[in-house]
Image (cartoon, rainbow, N blue to C red; front, top):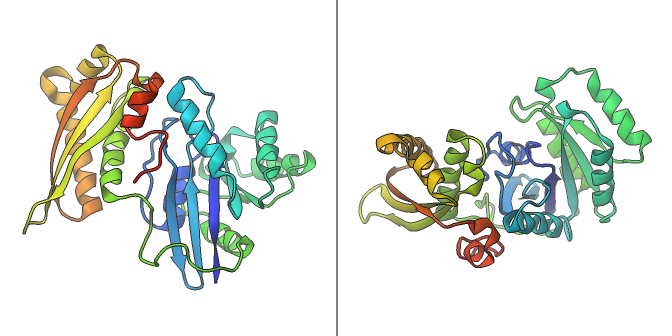
Length: 297
């Protein structure tokens, strides 16, 4: 059977996680319109007749601003090595800059075959697509370019078929009922962080970590108890996260609980506390404590 690993690489906010979720057919990674949404390497496993494709969703390529983004970029670089295929996700509606071409050539030089998923074609003029593809070819980016829209499902089947064709024959890496290497506990924390990214503006969401203290199913009941710490960097951020008389936090928790229940398939009793850890994104000991820079056990 066809079987292999595909590193999903691209700039921040290019649509990598949305594309992986669509390709796998289930939500395995959180999404938001903000850069730096994905912080960890997450595997999404697509099982089809005669094939298993393991997508490695990576943090978006981003200029390092603190120790956390440095760790994220290291994760992306290491994930692009020792894979069977690189799927470079490019935000098509932004055009093709010289820096994009340099970045693509960098990953081509890693030695693995590469495909380019030219995304967000639903929000751009179609006539731009062949011109950009021609520019890439003329500049020496010699690999297939597939225009796709993850939101509308455009060319997703074609992209899957090309990926499958380029993978080697081999044995499955995961049982066929597995869709991700990440636990339900991890995903519950990520869902909470996703809702914070969607709810709050500016820098606040990027300075938030979510720590899952309790994730336990009640005995004999279809309900999970979930207790979280929402860690931010400054006292004024805490005040904004909580809101007047706790209104902002209550609304965000209700938002998160609804998706947690859909994800887990049962009721969730959710509690959360907001805590301040000054400049935690530049403190390696706190990043390790919060789970960044190490693989999940």
